[in-house]
Image 1 (cartoon, one colour):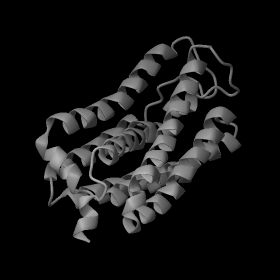
Image 2: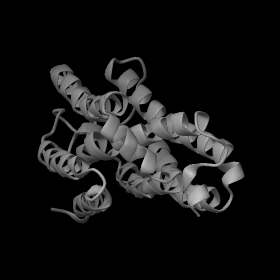
Image 3: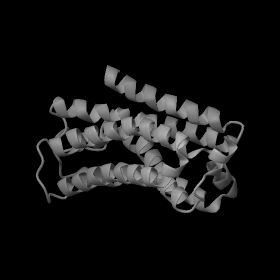
Image 4: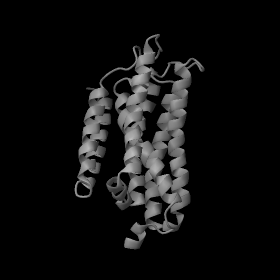
Amino acid sequence: MDILQFTILGLGATVTALISMYSWNKLRTVSYLISIWFVLAVALGQVPYFQVIGEWQAGDLIGFAIFGTLLSIPLGALLFAWKKSTAFQNFLETIPTWLLVSTQSYRMVGLAFLIFYLQGVLPFEVGFVTGVFDILVAVSAVTVAWLVYHQSTKEKPLVLVWCGFGLLDFALAFTIVGLSFFGLIQLVPEPTAMAMPPLTIISIFQVPLAMFIHVYLIKRVLHTPRIPLEYVAK
């Protein structure tokens, strides 16, 4: 196992452990499921879903479909639980907005995309752009979380802009990879490494989790009172 893969695994394990510990006495089911999800992501993340690094092959359609499914299932499950489970809704409502924002500091894992770009494994449009955007989201998460915690009146615009930027990062990456796969744009090298170890773990664990948090935060700040409950408690 190289240093980069060890770092990705270590960061994912840290995120899993922190979420599991936080939810243990609030909604233990979350602790179990986040742990199972991470273990499955690690196992499935060892599988190369494309055949060659840097070049699309004729038989990659099956891998593309499987990879997209593995990314979509956890996101869909989180959204479904949020809409249908009262227990999960109540659990989410107990988490302060600033804490949810701060979780995105784990997107420093975007350094991996930047490193792969510098090594010539990913193209500029994915490796550099996605890597830099992820790092910006991670760094700004700390600042936004601090401002939300100390200045509740600025929560709504700060969180909305920050979440919008975070989702834009994913939208650009997905769009570019999709356009490249279907031959609508030409990239050198082609971004097949996105669904090959060790980046697969990021795509099927950290990415769906981050997307859900962004969507949930947008809904929260648009539909909650000006002063959230955590500030009243303070």
